Image (cartoon, rainbow, N blue to C red):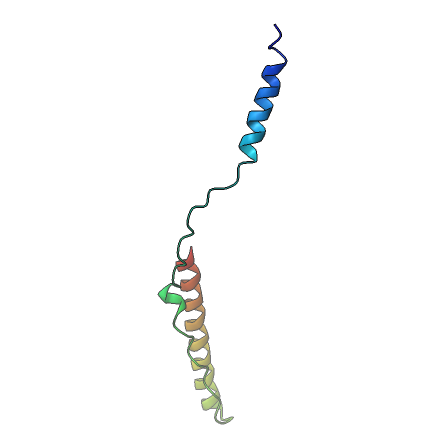
Length: 82
């Protein structure tokens, strides 16, 4: 019966040894290149050339179209990173 107090001590030492083991030195993988959806720049926003109503309406349409294209590119980029 002198071995009964040693068993819990031995179990505690074994558990402590497992938790203090240093992590393995496995090689880190090479960084992946960014997805192709992240490489293309957003289109440039159009410039407003004059303040005529028809010009402003066309500019606004082009501006919204360019902003929508840029947003879709950002969404595609975020989706490709997952």
